[in-house]
Image (cartoon, rainbow, N blue to C red; front, side, top):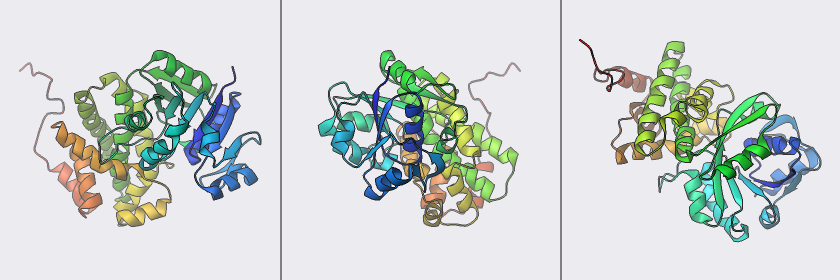
Length: 338
């Protein structure tokens, strides 16, 4: 059954998801706060800057009018970068009706409050039914129809399944999960690990180094997430290890690219200017280490990333700091038989 869906945010991810929704027969409206962006989408039917080559159907509606975008829609897909989530949610709040479903598709943790994206939205729009969708999914590949698998998470099973229904097709598979916290922590913290993976690439290190960062990275994320109440299964699935692998390895990953530039000697500011898109891991890094300290968790990779970003520790020195840490067992809860 056709649904009315508004995509709030016309960046690469919002644009790609609008195409998936339209392909599935839904009535789609795309909103952006930037008049120039909406003008480009109306005239070109393509996001020339962020998703070049991906043509959008002419019957997708593009608007800067937030009230008209939200009114009478069955689903609102919130796709603005995480740093703009709260301000956008504040603007949306007067127009959202009781029980209207908002699907958060950005990844991040708010530095000041240590709240996840869905928690921020729920706080600003308490009448909404807030859900999330994430997984190993680069907009550049979704936009051209390459097979992709993600997870829809919600407190209510029926809400997650309704999101599954509007998005799922033969090239975009959607699973469901009740572990919204685990999904958001996996999706946010992996961006910080991806910065470290990029730094290793920028320094010219090899596959051994990358494999170590990915596996020890998911261990760090998992320990914290489980202590906060998430499930181990989530961290071992698509929104945990799956999302971490793609973000650490992909040529499309802005976090990996920023890290790689820093590894090559760029400053954080120079790297973000070169990437030309929001590097979510930089915004999540301070929040990640604050969460680690709040819950008493040792997160050495995330700690040295913070030192590189905010304390001018050279990337090469950061790797050495990780390598010469005190000796320890890989899994401290495994028992020796001899």
